[in-house]
Image 1 (spheres, rainbow, N blue to C red):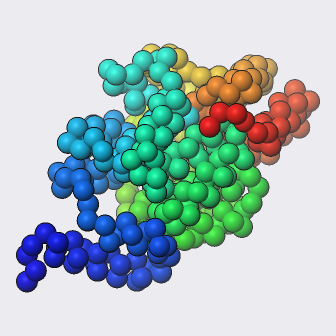
Image 2: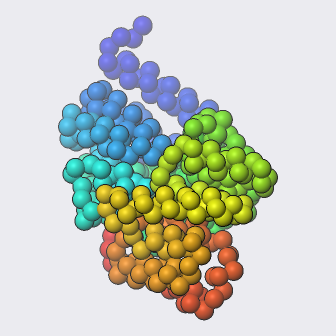
Length: 377
């Protein structure tokens, strides 16, 4: 019966608070203030922002940016929209998947420095709203994927303190803990993320990666099964299921389904799956497709991507050379898209070649990177 605007926002506040309590969420004083606050941005801008978050969490980065741009055109002071745009920019610098998508946008070129764009946009968001957890998340993932681990952990702690119930922050924070060799802390964070977002395919996908890295194979497979039931046409989930499944027949089905879904950016993972299954002909065929795609893409492949390619080809000499280039870029404070995925997918697998002197020296340099400080914030 309360039809005026203030009444509607009061109802919204009660519903939001009730849902948070039902999920067992921790509501900080800052979060309660944000819940109680009457939104200053337009409802149209908010609708575009919500759609963009859903698109971004499904790695549809181009569509997410389109809606975020529209939201900020409607309301330039919309801090949350600016924070989320910064988060997507960060992925453009540090994962090849997002970078290839974003380079199809006429605003960006192969020389675009997405790291700087992300950090600048996050700073602008914090000027508008000092309590933006996602802005701090952007800083955290940018530092993390450049192996500035101490800065990443500090930023994650700040993001989590501001938004302890944000599942994106929890999932990314868990990945950082896994990278830092803290598997139990990582499992606690992904466990909380999946309790807060039990129907989120991306949350489950991220959880499976962390769970497998922490040695919780059964939990990882359960997360992937749940993700597939919610989003059966997601090629990323099929790739992970193929890589993690202990049943060779099931693994083959997952990998072949991932290839049929035709996601060029996942071809290295598909090739890895075929190689682990002993299907060398299929692996070679997929790598031919990947090389053709990379050479014809909108921007040059990074050293880590070529290191991954030659590792899958079994050419360890070229793998070492390209890995050296990738680590050298990180040591100079530069980005190398695809390197983080390479570390999690390949370098952490304790492959026999990792004991060779030419690789031990590089992996030692990587450990030094993880323990160093940095002046870039």
